Amino acid sequence: MRQSKVFTKTTKEDPKGEEAKNARLLMRAGFIDKEMAGVYSFLPLGLKVIRKIEAVIRKEMNETLEASEIFMPALHPLESYEKTGRDDLDILFRTELATGRSLVLGQSHEEVVVPLAKNHIFSYRDLPVYLYQIQNKFRNELRAKSGILRGREFSMKDLYSFHVDEKDLNDYYEKSKVAYKNIFENVGIGEDTYMTFADGGTFSKYSHEFQTITEAGEDLIYLCEDCRVAVNEEIIDEQDSCPECGKKKSSLKKKKAIEVGNIFKLKTKFSDAFDLTYTDEDGEEKPVYMGCYGIGVGRLMGAVLEVTADEKGMIWPEEIAPFKFQLIAIGEKAEKEAEKLYEEYKEKIDILYDDREKPVGEKFADADLIGLPYRVVISEKTLDKNSVEIKKRGQAEEKLVKIDNLESYV
Ligand code: ATP
Ligand code: MG
Image (cartoon, rainbow, N blue to C red; front, side, top):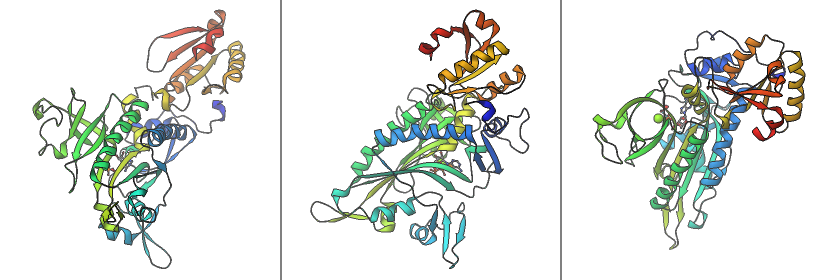
C-alpha cells in the first residue's frame, strides 16, 4: 500500500488524556481512534492487525479444536440472565425494547448459546458440539484506563463446548490448552505468556488463565520458571506452591501480568439453568457438560505492544504486522527505483511504501513508530552497489541486499 493513501496521520505528541502505552502508540500511529474511555475505533492499519490476530485464532479453533464458527446477537433478553442468576452483574449495560421488555448488551454469551444448543442437541449422537464466535462484548467496566487492554466495548473470541460427560469435557479442555499455547506463540508472545492456575468457581478446583507478563498488567501472578506455569495471586492462599512441581511460594517469582485468555470448566452450571439435557444410549436423560474458552482479541493486540514496543514506537511480530516491509527512498533516483520495486512486488508481499512528500527524517521516525518488521531503504549510495539496505525493526545493524537477490531474500 502507498502510505500517501493511508488516510490517517501520525503525530509526534502523545494524545491528551490517555495514560496507557498501548493506546498512546496506537493513536499516534493512526491505528486506532478514541471515542471515549474504553471505546475505540479501529482504523485501516489497526484493523489489519486485528484481522491477522483473528486469523491466527481461527486456525486453532478450526483445526486443533475442530470448532464451528457462528455469530450470536449482542442484544439479550434479561430473563435469560435471571435464569442463570447473572442479572445482578455490576458490569451489565441495560436497555429495553419499545414494549418495555428488558434487555442487556451481551457481556458474554452463555445465556445465548445454551438456549440455542437446546434447539439442536437431543441425544448422545448430537454430542460433542464445539461453537465459537468472534464478536464484540459490552461491559460497564468501572475503570477503563488501560487503553485497548480494558475496553467497555471490545472484541472477544468465545468458544463453548458441549459434552456427554465430565471425562469428555476434561479431554477437550486439555486440547484447548495446546491450542491456546499455539495462539500466543504464533502472535509472538509465547515466551512472555504463562498458563496460570486461577480460581475454578464453585464446581472446579481451578480454571486456567493465560497471563502475559507486563508492567501494564492488572493481575499479580507467581511464576514457576522451571514448569513455565504460574498461580494467580487471588488463589495463592489455597495453592501456595507450584501445582506442577510443588516448589514453594517463596521460590516463585511475583510478576504483574495481563490476562489475555482463559479457559473454564462450566460443567453443568449453565445447562442446569436452561435444562439442557440429552438422552444417552440407554434412553436415560442426562445433563450436558460444558466448557468455555475466551480470548480478548483487542487486549491481545495491546498486550503484544506492551511487551514489544521500545522508546521509538511499536514493534510488530511478523505474523500480525499490518505489513511486512516498510519501503523508503532517499533522493530522486532512488525514488524511481523504489516505484519500480513497489510495482513489481506489491502483489506478492505486504509492503507499505512511503511515497509521501516528507523529509526523510520524518519518514524514518514514522517507520520506527509504526514498527513493521523490516525497513527497506533505497538511496544513491545503495544503488551504486545495486542494492537496498534492510534493517529489522528493533535491531541495530542493517544489511545490504542486492536488488537481483531480493526475490529470494523475501
Ligand atoms: P478480567 O479479569 O481482566 O476482568 P475476565 O476474567 O472478566 O477479565 P472473561 O470474562 O473471562 O474475562 O473474558 C475472556 C477474555 O476476554 C479475557 O481473558 C480477556 O482477554 C478479555 N477481556 C475481558 N474483559 C475485557 C475488557 N474489558 N477489555 C478487553 N478484553 C477483555
Ligand atoms: Mg479474570
